[in-house]
Each structure stands twice: as C-alpha cells, then as structure tokens.
Length: 245
Image 1 (cartoon, rainbow, N blue to C red):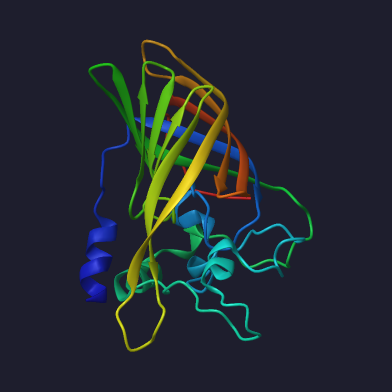
Image 2: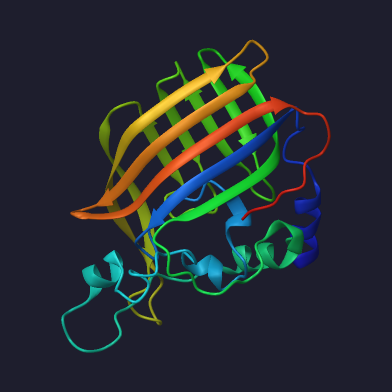
C-alpha cells in the first residue's frame, strides 16, 4: 500500500505554469478547528497532523471547543476527535522531509507567521480564476468576480470554506467524532461563521498579481482563528522549493 501511495505522490497532480508565494499571520485558539492554506507543509510530524501544532500559547492548555461540547462536567478526560485514518498516515510517511517544518520549541506568542512558495496551476473557467498549488494533495482556490474566494484544503479540518467580501456567512462542516473505541466514528455537523474583513484580488491579463485576505472564523460564541493572508502569483521562472517559516 505504501508503494502505491508513493507512486501517486511522485506523479504531478497538475502541470505548474505559475509560481505561488503565500504568507500569513494567524492567531489559532483551538486545537481541532482551523483552516490550513499551507497543505502538508503546515505539519512537522504525523502526530502533529492530528491537531493544530500552532495554537497560541495562552490557549494551548485550555480545552478545545469540541472537548467542551462533548464533556459532561465530570473530572475525566473527554473524548477526542478520531485521529487520522490509515490512508493519511501512509501518505505522511511518504512525504519528503523537505516539505515539512522541523519540530521547534513551543511558542508562547499569540500570533504565528508563515511563508512558503509552490508551483501552481492557474487558469480561467468563465468568470472564475482557478488556482491549484501545493504537494501531495493540492489546495485549490476559486476566485469569482473578484469578491468571492472558495478554498478547498485537503489537509484542513475545515476543508471547504467560502469567503465573501465584506460579509459574515454561516457555513457547515462534518467532523468525525470518536465517542466509543468499539463504535465507528460518527460525523458531527459543525456550524461555523466566516467573517471577511478584507478581500482584494488584483490579477493582470497573464493571471499574475496578488490576493489579500483577512478573516476570522467562529464556532458558536468562540473565535477559533483570525488571519491575514497574502497570495502572490507570478510567472514561473524555475521550479520553486517549498519552505515554511
């Protein structure tokens, strides 16, 4: 099985025709609920892929939103979301180490800054611009009319998120929950709100330019993420090597 996954990873999911530079500043306050625009590069080990390794220091020791939801008030460890399945484990084992961030000491800072570069495929589909980028399982951005951005992020708990310029929208996602080791996980439907404070898309006739995105993500009354993102698309001069800081 591992050999089969390795062969799939070595195959290009798309032919790069642009270079994508991504930078962002995030405040993560939850271990299980977050967006991941950086793909597999966001993680350092398979264990870190189970939960967000970059939760702000002041929140890292606090129970997450799902833990509080599933807790019954008794002094015992609440049930946790189900860990990644065998397929994700096999996939992570096949990823070249240059694509992941080496382990680092726990940070006590509130915000975390990231930057990385990828080969990307950029094209148009009617009124939309489609951008695919990343390694293993690529992320995809769909920009429509310059005021709507839809992101598909395979290595993210919120794998499908739509951002509407200057709007706050209610969206939903299914999340697998393991309540009993002897019972298969059940899907919990989570409602979350996405508030877009800024969405600017400036692309020229060559589909080069930049996208600025500032948003927050709330589940119930709790904010689990606040972020400022910058995506820069340029002509592909040479094959970029992914890096993240």
